Image 1 (cartoon, helix red, strand yellow):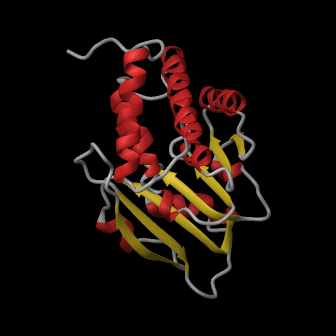
Image 2: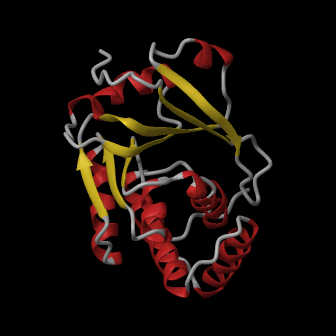
Length: 230
């Protein structure tokens, strides 16, 4: 029987969470400052507290959150390049908020249609003093950003085809689309909208997890600059 989820991490839990986080980051070859570790743990405490009332995530055990949420998010960090990043269907800020904490030189838009989740993210951004995060409460098909993004990132958001259709109006010719997937169905690859290709499929090794994790990297074909797909 699982123990009752805490309202906030106690001293022993804090030590264990930090230990697991540091060990996981070491396995991911990430060298984070003490401030970054503190901010991630502060995020985790806020998530635990808000989750009690707003059910932001079905994962409630703190150590499981470290693996399934924090380290899972950090596993894609080496692939996120550019300055303007959009996290579509960010939920509780996964992976976008975690990536924004770790790399404050990149600018992140965290988009979700759920008001409770975006209110949580706004509070996180305020309490952690993050200057590189913009939170947007909107459906993706209604959201507008004329400049386009360097990277559009999703985590278990939709099928690849549906995701490309919904985000097409936000893509530049050079935008990379990064889709985090547990399982990749062959039909998803063979039914991509015309004008898109899969650059690569990268297996992700998440410390503490034995389950499949993959990152599908997509882009437009050379010469295809049409934005609207629907």
